[in-house]
Length: 281
Image (cartoon, rainbow, N blue to C red; front, side, top):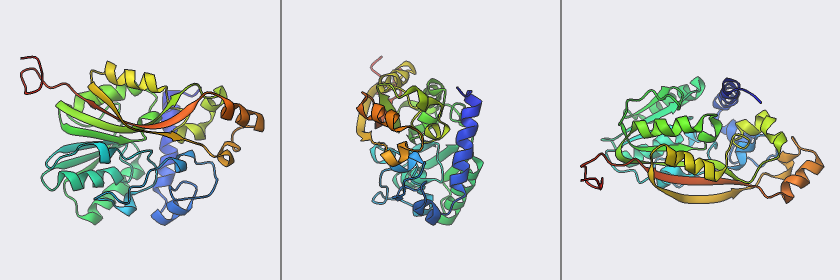
């Protein structure tokens, strides 16, 4: 089993390579959400369609998500929004359309090439209230009680220490604020072999945890009013499975009792005591 630092280096390497692709290359390759090829890039099969969302910027859409958290995030004009694992800026630009000129959007990513691409996209769009910061989401370069909303799209499953991320989300949210996060979770156990396959980790599969454990981490971090906003089953095509598993292992996986799912989950940081809605006065 790889160490946390080895896993993070693996993810940084994979996503740095994606950031260097042009939008056209990404769309036509096995890394692209619109691709029909059957390569070894698992994350290419999970992305939802952003094109109908207000604020959508095609150059920022690398097809790396597994949901539409900004569509569920209840973002209001003037809000401060933080996007974890912001990539080329896709969710940040959708969020910016909701917060307007009076709000602010902060994207955090630990891949330098993604930060460079996101900043270039923001400059091209002329947005001066969207900024991108290089850093780990387990130790965010953000002061406490900053955000009205935190969003993230298919990123926490790539982080080995998931409880640390939820604690950081709790820290940076204002009292009474909330998050909406899309991620990959499991029901049942994946084949043991999958945990050692680097591409399945970078592809958001083998780093995923049980849905019940995921929700428990949220509760243990102090959040309340936890709700599943959306849930969908992820099916990995056999053409991709053949890159990693024998025919016998594929049959075992297909007949086993395991589900790979995308969920979008909402939760709130309790309001400070004696604030409206806190319930403690």
